[in-house]
Length: 287
Image 1 (cartoon, rainbow, N blue to C red):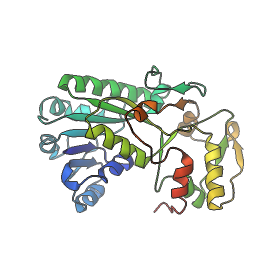
Image 2: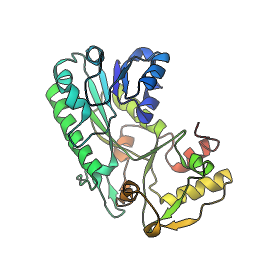
Image 3: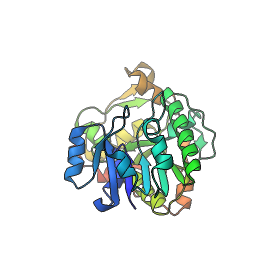
Image 4: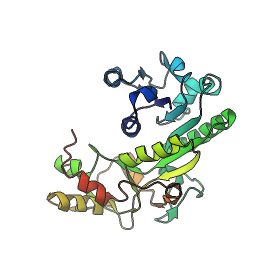
């Protein structure tokens, strides 16, 4: 494997960290400082902000066998395809697999009902509409190249440094209560695990990468507080809560997401529910 990652953020880095640096053809970040930090770890790093091509990237793509895309699309399209569509189509002679990190937001609202990969997409928010467009664009590019495309639809991502324990410790945890509302979650280690499975076998398709137990968000905060002996934050009625428009929009999508397809490939979750994960994160300071 020679992996190239567009957008080596929280989720993609968890996957890269499982690999020998020699297996990484390159990673991109918007920050020169972060690029220097990656380089110090022995990873070829390139600065790419999506608005223009990055120096050295075409040469790295030429030796890439596995391409992972983890950059959010914009209204004008997917930043990688806007700058590198031709390179992907004609400048990557060794390309064997493409992975695209998407979101379960593409399913929209189902009033708490179950969805799976066969459920038609019906995005509500603009960001999810753009994700659907990006999924379709990458599907077309992969078909033109004749290589498998794995679309990983991710639930709410958490893990070291980003979790209810950190929020409680920093005094930022809130127990918003909207009757009937549930969310799925996914620990970043299971995103890395799913990528390892799919990339190592060059598997294509759409896969929900999500935990076993969609749960009310206030229950997760309460469980974390009791587990770590924090005071349980008071319940706050959702309708009267002061929230940003983006935060409020997340609560407009209520669904339970099935992970049966990923399990059918033989994947075993390291953290099937928030309970196992929070027990491992109990001492997380976020630093």
